[in-house]
Length: 311
Image 1 (cartoon, rainbow, N blue to C red):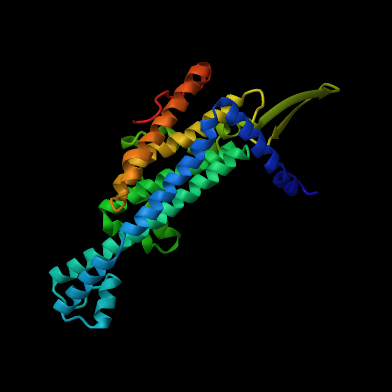
Image 2 (tube, helix red, strand yellow):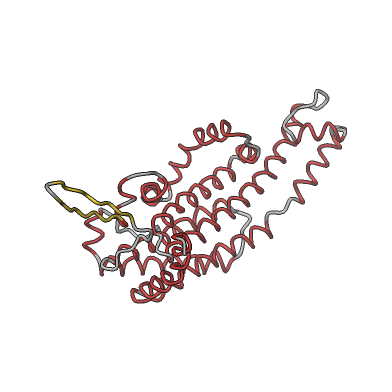
């Protein structure tokens, strides 16, 4: 059996081990992962119902008739080019409607990115791959940050949707990274962002610590240091390290729920907004408080903030 196949085979055993550990800490730690998935699913379903293009399509059609645009001229406008025959105010109105269209499309795609990033993280933490699980939180946070930008600045959504090549992608990143940073500050996600970056997004020493082993040997006055890196980020003697990372993933979901609501005003499910989300945030706060009481030295030694959520 190849080493890769051995790693794949180990996943089932690792999932059982992590499930047992999470249940020993608190059974609701396991169910909270499913609760977060359900919330994101309901967000997607409700957004799909509310984010229709009917009004936008009707408005564009009426504006095209008002301006006497041919089909070819309308295609030019849709692609961001202004025909010489169209009035400036009419062109701007059509472009505004087109940007609304791209805002909905872009936010919908990013919502799928949020869901996938979370699902990858939820399964990787169960496989004892804590580093990659934490790293995915940065993708999720960035996706919600961009959704928030696109809800307000619909022209930016058009730009994002139509990016071509690495250069345009880098320029877009450089132009929006300050906004993403401000988003993290506003919703108290900077700690999670930095943890994700150090754990998996950059090759930093701190990202290796959990699985790193160092041993020394000597022979004939020659000393050798031997380094090895485990493929699972788990120390059986320190289960709190895995538990706190699971809690950080869940706490990230709790913190993202408010900006998700603001970025998706099309979502209007009262049960989701008024009952399920507050309940989830409260449950995560209770779990985090329990961890703080059981492992206060761990939090203090690593300088981890003890504030659970904004709620």
